[in-house]
Image 1 (tube, helix red, strand yellow):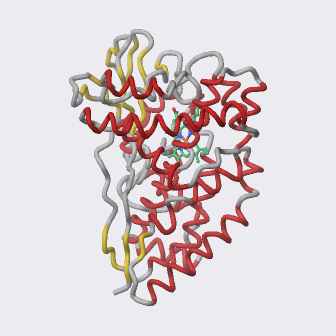
Image 2: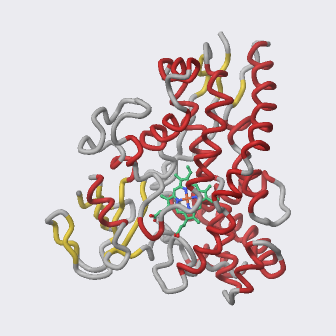
Image 3: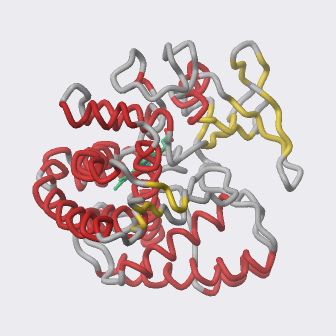
Length: 371
Ligand code: HEM
C-alpha cells in the first residue's frame, strides 16, 4: 500500500496486493463504493452548469450504490444479462466475427493494413448489448463517442476547456437517455415498473452503455495486441493444446481494461496492519493484484491455465462484482477463437496508444499488416 497525492492534490491510498484488494472489495460496509464514479479532476462550475442544463445526474445506482436499493437494481440488470440469454448470443456473434475475419484476411492477403480496433473490436460489444438490453435508437458512432467522453470526463486528468467540451458531449447524450428512460421498453420498463425514479433508470442505462461495451472493446483490443507477441500461445490454440477460455482468463489477469477501481473508507479501519481513517479514498490497483506473486507462479508471463490465473480481480469482487462478466468472457472467447489465426505472420504497424486515465485503458487503434 502507498499514499499517493494526485494531480489536484487529493491524497489516495493505493492498494496493490491481491489479498488486500480482495479484502476491500469483499467488505462494502467498511469500504463503500460511493466514490466509484466521482470525477478524478473536480468539475469546475462552468462544466457543472453545462451538465445541469442537460439535467445530468448520477445518483447511486449500480457501481456507486452502497445503499438499500442496490440489490434490486442489480437483480433487474442481472436478469437482462442472465447466463442463458448471454449463451444464446454465441451463434450470432460467431457468425458476425467470422464474416469480419474473412474480410480482414482478404485485406491482409492483399497487402492492405487493417485496424483490429476499428474494424473488429470497437462496435462488437455494443451490437451484442443491444440484442440483450433495449437501448435508445442511436448510431453506434454516437454511443461510442459519448461513452469515451464519459470515461475521459470522470477518470482523466483534464484542463477546464476539455472538461467543458466533454460535459457538452456527455450532457447531449444524457438527454437522449433521459427520453428513452421515460418511455423505453425492456430493462428501462422493468426498472420503472419496480418503482425506481427516472434518475435511477437513466443512471443504470448510462452505466451499462459505458461499462457494458467500452470496457469489452478495450479488452478485445488489448488481448489481440498481447497475443500478437505470444506466438507459442497462438500455436497452442491452433493445435488444441491451449484452451480458449484459459487464454481469456490469462488476458484478463495481465491486460485488464479496468486498471483500478475506487472505494472509500466509511469508518476508521485497518488494512494489512495500516490504519485507514474514515473518508480515505482508496485506489484498488486491479491490474497489479493480477500480477501478485503470492497468487500466480509466473506473474508477468502469459501462461494460459497456470495456477492462480483465474483468481484475477479484473471484474472486481463481492456485492458489486461485474454483472457482465459472463458476457465479456463470451465475447472474448469468440474473438480469440475466430480472430487469433489472423495474427500469424503479421507485423504491428501501429500499436494501441493509451491516453492518461486513472481507470480505463482506452486504446485508440491497433493496426497490423502482412510483411
Ligand atoms: C472485460 C470487460 C469488463 C470488465 C473488465 C469489467 C469490470 C468491472 C469492474 C472492475 C466492476 C466493478 C466491480 C466492483 O466494484 O467490485 C464492474 C462492475 C459492473 N459491470 Fe463490468 N466489466 C466488463 C464488462 C461488462 C459488461 C459487458 C457489462 C454489461 C453488459 C458490465 C456491467 C457491469 C455492471 C452493471 C457493474 C456494476 C455492478 C454492481 O455494482 O452491482 N461490465 N465491471
